[in-house]
Every structure is written in structure tokens, then in C-alpha cells.
Amino acid sequence: MPISPNQGSSGGGTAVTITGTNLSGTTAVRFGTKFATSVTNVSPTQVTAVSPSGNGSVGVTVTTPGGTSGPIPFYYVGAPFKQTLSPTSGSTAGGGTVTLTGAGLSTATSVSFGANSAVPTVVSDGQITVVVPAGAAGSVGVSVTTAGGTSNGLSYTYVSPPTVTTVTPDEGPTTGGTPVTVAGTGLTSTNSLTFDGVPAPFTVISDTALSAFTPPGAAGLVDVVVTNDAGSATATDAFEYIAGPGI
Image (cartoon, rainbow, N blue to C red):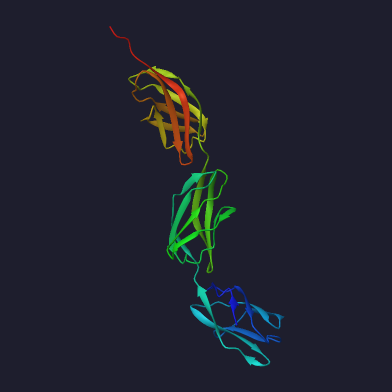
């Protein structure tokens, strides 16, 4: 006499289907010593029941006017516990892989990032990985659903890929130190700004502007690259280094 699913939350509330024979007139379903919170006699071969609270492994029995069946195992699972999430941010396009650690994760069936969800890969009871679905820019709650319930408490930040439209002024001496403003979009989470591959010190003014000082560079036109957790944007030949006069 199989039962599906054969595991559920220790808090109870799991709807299970029991199949067998001669189940008409079922009067009770027990999970160990506790009665199911509700029982529906679907047919002579099927009964549905909602599990009470419990712990560990218990035997499920069905009682009809003809007697009580032998027990079939049902396993209570504790609610999951999430400890860390890494990385904690990524592109609005999704596609990055996130690792969650904690406990009670071996039965994880879904990870939700705000309103969007994805199916995880179980590594162990203490670790799962999941490919992040696409989402709108901003911070969202992350929840994990297992046979034991749903756990919340962590957050993930969706970041828009950057763009660069202008660098003002667009020229300066090869010695560096020119104060410039880099305009674009998605600049709030900028973690790197380079001129011809050389890092430049910068300050985020807004999502559309950075202030920076050019590093030293060789004479000529160079690319300016802005990078955040969602990717990089390149402004080709956006700044020109000008050599000083020689006498």
C-alpha cells in the first residue's frame, strides 16, 4: 500500500495519497499514534489524508470496518535553515549560479527570488546551488522550499548592466590626475573603472554618473571601461591622453 509523498513537514499539513484495496468506508488514518487532521475516501483504492505534526519516521495505517492495515513509513522533515548565499548580487538577465548553505536542504524543490523561482541542485543536506532567474533591478527576498517547509531571511540584489555614454572632459595630460565625469546608466553598483586597462579612483554620484581622476597613460585615444556585478561597458576611444610639450 504505497503513500505519496512519503515525507512532509514536521509541522504537519502535508496532503498525502494512500493507494491500496478495500479502502471504502475508511474511518481513520493514523501517522504513528496521531490521527490525520482530515481524511477523504476517494475510491475503494484511494484515500487522501493530511498529516498531523510529528518527528522522525512513523508508520501510517488505514482503518476501515474490515480492520486496520499494516503500517507504511512516512518521514517527517524539519524546516530548512539558510545560513549564507553567495554571490549576493548579479545581472537582471539572471543566469548566474548561486550557492546556498544551511541545514535541512536535501529535499529542496524550489528557490524563489522574489516572485521568480528556479529548481535547485542538491549538493548535500547543507548545500544547494541554483541558477538565478531573470528579475528587475533591486533587492528581493530569497526563500527555499523543502519537504519540511519554506525558509526565508536572505536577500539577493539584481543589478542592471552598465552603459557609458560620455566622458567629460574627454582629454587630459599623460601624467593623469584629470578630474572627469563618466555618464551612463547602471552606475550605482560600479566596482571598477579603467582607462586603457589602468584602474582609476572614482566616486559614485548617482546611477547615471561617476566622478573620477584619470590615471597616468600613454599618449593617444584609450578605451574607458565601467564594470559592475552584471558585466562591463566599454566606451571605445572615449578619452585622449595628450603628451606635454618638449623643449
